[in-house]
Image (tube, rainbow, N blue to C red; front, side):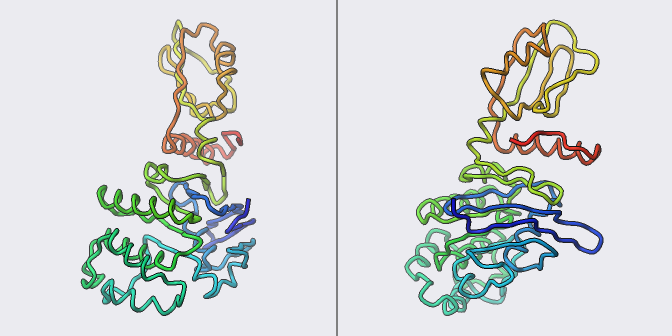
Length: 312
């Protein structure tokens, strides 16, 4: 599988604060990779290092086959980048902004595609950017980053601060374009329900390292939310498999997340640990539920100083 971005052993510190402690990550061509992680885990720092907006302290990053520190006009004409904190020339209108940007991309800029995006996004053309809503500004950023048909699209929290209707319009437009254009997309977002609609892969960052990198389909196949009901109240400490995350009991009921689920094995395992089990339910989980379950284990890890979940 060809990767448009390869990150190896990336490290970055700000003063005495270590933001990234050895990130390894691949962004494969033709896929949508969702980049998730708790607040402060280093997602934006990773993206900025990859886009050469910040210098890495150590490690190696290649983007479109080029060392990220050497990215130039030829590469940036093939990259569309949108960030929640992206600065814009707010005195300009959308029309003026597009007129300003168009010559920078030469023949790469597609005027017909630009017109299609303008119609699809429905943005006021002559209103100064400073007078547009946040949703309209994000649409303008996306339009100006896509009109030259980039090979790679990098989105850092593009839905931040958008109301539900604008977020849905924004995502629907992006989803349609990604499918029709066959773009490679790397998207960092806290809106996991939205990302789940079109992500092929997920990479989860925790404490400055990539903890998990997997296809969404296989991730959801191996995670289940499990509830077990037994004959009498559960008491005392129970030794449970390492794949059972966030194990809790309440009266006669035990609840946990099984991170390595196998239908043929689960009943046997439950019987081994709960000989008086009356029934159990193993429910599929959404990507958001999986992320929340893992985030809870990360919090426990930070308190205990030891890993609390297995690799896939």
